[in-house]
Length: 353
Image (cartoon, rainbow, N blue to C red; front, side, top):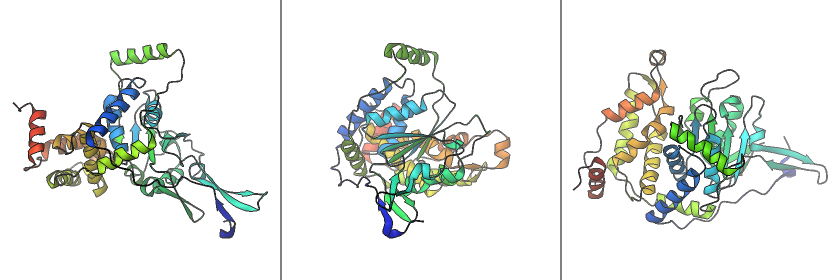
């Protein structure tokens, strides 16, 4: 370990000053523009893109888990470009070391000192591609970064840029040479998204879009910059949530802990993620309040990867998403909500005049 007197960390991005919150209508407008811009390149993934953007606006991290070739990496790159974040991608492999992510101290002969060289995690949006192909030791290098916005190397801590978000991809169909993400790592991701195969029309659009580009590389122009993203995140933080909605999130998480097919249910971090993503989704829809439908819409993506199923459920082919769907259908919604929430729920149910 280098002597403290010889440590000379390289410059890292200082946390910016507090951003001025944007109003809800402006956040909704900019969010729609970002999604429209990304959708010109990433075809057939609008629901997943909406949840991914809502998660970033809520300050969280995203895990895309699906078969290869569906555009997960392209989606992450395009989102980063559209929201003005510096983007770095790291291809995970079995021989990857933690220092390959965080950076390390190197000796500089010209100065006779050890200098910290930041790794690729020092960026705005970090893509860990095929994260389940690297060892648990290397996977754990992201835990502190995702939870605390900093990394610790040789006893020295270095803050990451603000904002900082991780988007990881995982391949669920192969097990040779892969390492399943431990529960502690999965719990750091606010949502886990499955893209799914596009329909025939969507797949045709993918092919035709490639022909129209006349090249393999696809990119999008920025819609906002980093300062605007921070202002959007600050605006969402100004939106209060009815206590009944918070209680509903707690009830859903608690129901997963009592479910017969679940060995370990969603933690309080899960219920908090449920509330934060639902709030971001509400703001993206132009509302400064959250309705139960917002919570229901994000429940599977927020909760399913936080459940550990019993051996009997696993052997029976039961999936965590099925458990969450059953919980959402069985747990009653808030008995009392405000007038705006009642009106919005009536419109969603088609009962409004």
